[in-house]
Amino acid sequence: MASQVKPDLLSSAPAHGARHVAIIMDGNGRWAKKRFLPRIAGHRAGVEAVRRVSRAARELKLECLTLYAFSSENWKRPASEVADLMGLLRHFIQSDIDELHANGVRLRIIGNYRVLEPSLVEMIDGAMARTAGNTGPVIAIALNYGAQDEMVRAARRLAQRAVAGEIAAEDIGVEAIDEALDTADLPPLDLLIRTSGEHRLSNFMLWQAAYAELYFTDMLWPDFDAHALGQALDAFRMRDRRFGGL
Ligand code: FPP
Image 1 (cartoon, rainbow, N blue to C red):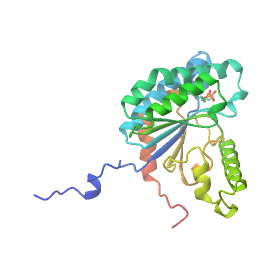
Image 2: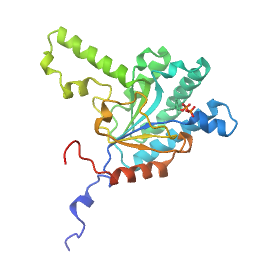
Image 3: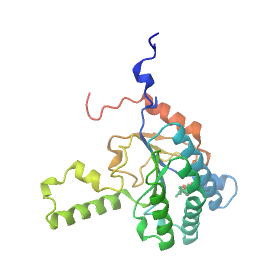
Image 4: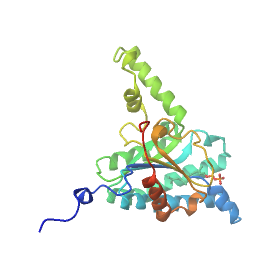
């Protein structure tokens, strides 16, 4: 008997239709404060949320999940908090890379991470190289990332190529800029989520967010989970994306 299932339901594309979701993980400090705990406790709970949401992203068949872990402006925080955040990142890569690799995840870093402490850079490069051949989702961590800095670095790269005579000024268009950004080989950004009730982009993926859907929730990042991601994707599914058309 012929299958009654519509061909599009046979495809493995997820029903929510999103390929790339990015999250501004905000509210760790407030989560800790509400519990009379030090800020580091909020960041630790934030790492647990990173684990939960990374697993959920795989189950929801996202191609890419980008997480804003440390901005190029976060250096303004007290040195002890900066050290805590770097320590958590280091520990996360050390302790989770086996599971991520076993699940076919490709780890990527966006942002100017090369200026970080050499042993951390080495660890990051090792983790990225180890998972580069995987075929599962990309988990991209934005580290020492600022969208304006990313665009400046891209502009410089293109200018250097122009000066070297490799490209003409007229060759610099949307595609060339796309390819010069840290996100060059990642899918287009579909959905940008910010937790903790703040309604701003804070220098995150400004170029990539041109046609992304924005989703804000009052939930603090350490409380975010698979259900919350599902709710954001349900909201995304209801949006009418026109990309400037009708
Ligand atoms: C914002 O909360 C959060 C950050 C600046 C850091 C996010 C980092 C993590 C979740 C942990 C490390 C990440 C990985 C990928 C292992 P906030 O401290 O600004 O919160 P507040 O606005 O309530 O003070």
